[in-house]
Picture 1 (cartoon, one colour):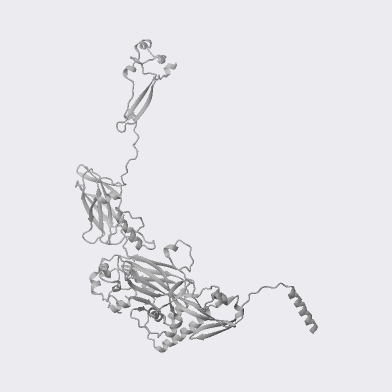
Picture 2 (cartoon, rainbow, N blue to C red):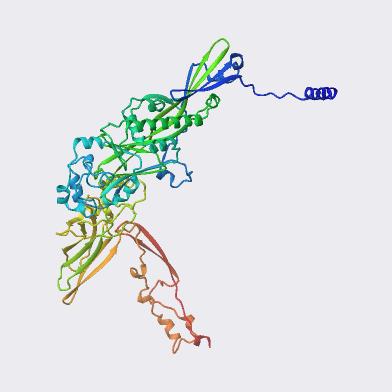
Length: 640
C-alpha cells in the first residue's frame, strides 16, 4: 500500500510541474482583533512590514491618520424640473408653493401691525387652551376671519417667551402633522414646503422609538460643531454622535424650541439610562453592520449614510431677517404648511439636511517589523445645504368681466352698461394697456411657482371696474389707456355694477372694460364693443357689435376705368356717307359690306390712337392704345 501511495504522489507531482503557474494576488499576512472602547468598535490589524511593501497598507499613504467620510449625497431637484422627465422613484424632489385660498380684507387688516410670530400656527391652534394658541374660543375658518371685531376681541397676544420658543418648531415623536394639514384651507393663505426622498431611516427610527429624537436635536442645536472633510475637499459642520450618547444628560431645557408631540410623558433618570443602554447596543450593532474595512476605504467604497432630519429656515427676502426654523424628522414624503405668513411679503426658505455618516478613522503606526492599522468608526452628523427657494402670497387677477348693454327706447341719448365678475378660472397671457403694468407678471411668477395655477382666477369680492370710451376704433391697446372715463363700484359689496352714459344718435362709440381686484391686479381688457344708438319715429334702437382694431389699408383698391372714362367716336363719324347712301336704296340687304361711315375727313375707322392719363396726385402716367374698327354684323337675310 505504501508503494502505491508513493507512485500516486510522484504522478501528481509530475503533473504540477507541467502546469503553468497562475499569479495569485498576494495579501499581506496579518493578525486581526476587534475590541470595544467606550462602547465603540475598534478593529486592529498588524502586518509584517515586508508583506506591505507593494500592496495594501502602503497605498493608504504616508500619513499617520486617515479620516474618511465620503458618502453619496442625493441633491434634490425642483418639481418643475423633473415633471416632464423620466426619473427614478428614489430621486429627491422638493417644492415651495404659496396658495391664496380666499380673500379676507379683515384678516389682512388684522395682520398689518403684527409680526409673523404673532400670527397663529396651523399645528399649534388645536385645543384653544395652550399658551401657544393665538385665539381664545375661535376656530379659524372662512366665516370667522371675515368678522374683524371677532379677531380683535378673541386674540391672545403671545408673550415674548412664547414667541422666542416658536422661533424653532421641532416635530417630534408620534406627532401626526399630516392630519393637521387638512385644516390648511381654513386659512386665507399659506405656504407649503414639500420634500420627497427615499432614504435609510435606521438611526432616526430608533431615536423616535426610544423617545430620544427631540433630546438629540436639542443637544445638536446647543452644541459646538467641529468640521470634517466631505467628499475629499469640502469642509462641513459636524456633530460627533459617537460621543453624544455617553456625554448627554438627556435633559431638554432649551426655551427657544417648541416641541410638537402627541404625549408629554415624564421620564426619570433611570428610564433614560435604560434608553441610553438600549441605544448604545443599537449603535454597536450598526457599527458592526456598516463599518468599512481598510480595503473598502482603499477601494473608495462610500460610507453608510442616512438623512436624520431637516432644518427649514424662513427669512424675509428683502431684509434677510431670520424669522423661524422648522426641524422635522426625515421621511419619504414631507409636507409642511406655514400659516405664519403675511400677504405680499417675499419669503425665502432655505433647507439644510443633516446626514448621519458612518465614516472611518484609521491610524497607521510602524515599527521595525510591522505596521499596525487601527480602524475606529466615526459616526458624524453632517450639515449640508439642501435647497433654497423664494415665493410670496399674491391674489390672482380676476377674469375678463361680463358686459351687457341696454337702452331706454324712449330716451334718445342714454344707455346703461351692466358689468359683472366672470366666475371662471383660466390660463391666458396678460394683456397690459401700458408698459408699467407688466410688473404684474413678475408677481404672478413668484406666486405660481409650480406653473400649475391659472393666471386668472375668480374670487368673490367688492368688484371694481375700469371703463374706456373712444369715438374712433383704436389701433392698439396703448391707445385705449388714454381714454379712461370712469372707475365704477357698487355702493354696497357686490360682484356687479351698473354704469350710465350719454351718447349722440347715429354716432358710433367704442367701449372697453376690465376689472381690478382687491390688491390692484388687473384683468385682461374686454373685446372692443361698437355701440350705436339710432332713432325710428319716437323710439331708439341700440346696435352692439364686437370689432377688432383699426387696420389701415396698405394698398390702393382697384378702380374700373369704365366708371371714370368713356371713349366713343364723334357723331360725324357714325353717319353713313351720302354717296354710299344712294346705292343702298331701297334696302341694304346683301349690301352690308359696302356700308361706310363718316361725313368728315380724315376718317377714324381703321386707325390707331394713343391716350395718355396723368395722375393729379402722384404725377404718374399711363398710356392706352386703342384700335378703332368698324364691325359689320350680318343677319340671316344677308346670306339668302
